[in-house]
Length: 269
Image (cartoon, rainbow, N blue to C red; front, side):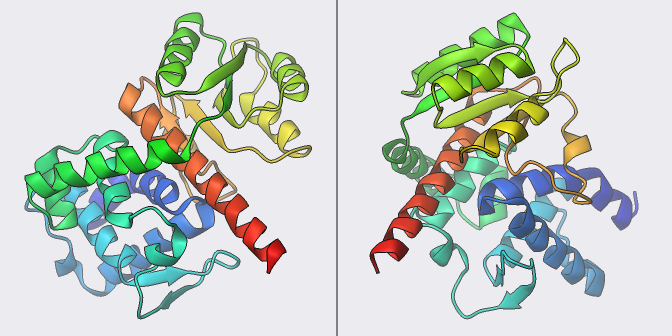
């Protein structure tokens, strides 16, 4: 398989990881773009010791630790400080380990290879991320999902994470009505609902009236990870694992909390 074929095969999920790590599409895609530019200049940068996918994520991590993205125009510029130190208050390396294990499904050995850590350190990092994120989040959750058993699984999972479920909506109109009655702190939304309505449309309508982090769930994630148009920053693919939902929901809430804290500090300055 050629290098271009390898990149094309794994690029959508690398975009997903980058967006979850940075908190938005523009920053995540810009980091991926920086990685692709580096790879075009020097193909030897792709180390496939643990396979091409792990090699791409390893190269992305090296870029992530050396450049910063301007979120307003998605330009990439080299800075002396690692960008994640300005991105958030939660320790960056634990968040990376947590997402690589829980969202992307890498083994501990592969995560260690990607991050340059041994297995013992990798385990410490993921434990630390879980503790730090748990301290950051607890909110009311709206679930938009028309498949009964999936909705039940999500409701149980969300409650086990310490959240309160304000309701399960199965159509666009149900979602809008529930959210306007009880404004949620997080939305988990299936993109395509069985009655022909769209969870994406419902969310877009709600976001016009109030701000809330959203995690989308779809059986076809590659359709929303092209980088060619405005796309979800937080995306879970079906069938999902509980750890994946936990990881992405935590990231979405984490960035929302940080955004509010920055706004409050700016207002008081």
